[in-house]
Each structure stands twice: as C-alpha cells, then as structure tokens.
Amino acid sequence: MQVAFLMHSIRVTANKLAVGFDLHLRGPTFVMEPPTRLEFSNSSGGWLDCSASGSPQPSIDWLSVDGTSVGDVSGIRRVLRNGTLVLLPFAAAAYRQDIHSTVYRCVASNSVGRIISRDVQVRA
Image (cartoon, rainbow, N blue to C red; front, top):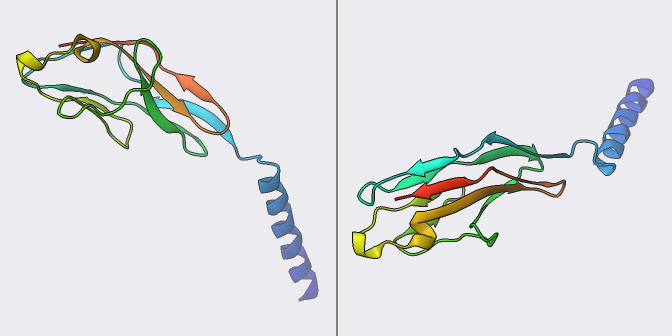
C-alpha cells in the first residue's frame, strides 16, 4: 500500500512539474480563416467567421486596413464573442466606405503568440 501511494505521489509531482514548465502551451492556429472577399447587399448584410485553436485558447480580434482594432458600431457593425464580424443590414444613406468597402484582418492571439489572417476585401 505504501509503494502504490509513493508511485501516485511521484506522478502527481511530475504533472505539477510539467505544468510549471508550461509544456502544454501552444500558439494559435486558424481553424477557420476568413475568405479573401466578401460581397453583400445593404439589405442582407454579411458576416466573416474566424476561429483558432491553441493553448491557452486564443482570443479573436479584427483589424481594419490601417491596423487599428475594430469594434462595434451601433446599428452597423458587431464583433461577436465567437470571433464573427457582422456587417448589419443598413439603409443606403448609412453607407460608410470605412466599414462597407474596406479590408479587414482577423487576429488570433494567446500568451504564446499571435497570427494574422490574409486580407479580406469587403464590399457592399
């Protein structure tokens, strides 16, 4: 009984060492990279999916053509928690070139690294 306990104790210690040295960390890789183009109508809207795996789980963000982070624009654009960029249906008068006819890039990042998707040309 004492021998079995000692072996179990060693395994637990070894697992703690493995975690301590971060042997299970892995940089992000795309599971779903967005397409190179998205064309949509103002009456339908459109969306871009992006997802990645890694350890720890990567976060997904979107960049605009100038490299700045993209966020929600009320009634026009949403960035969902799952990494999807949604371009909402809009009235023709609400057209914005910086949102509806531009380039976006998906960024997946975790503590190990960061990857950036190919350019996505969006046009309404």
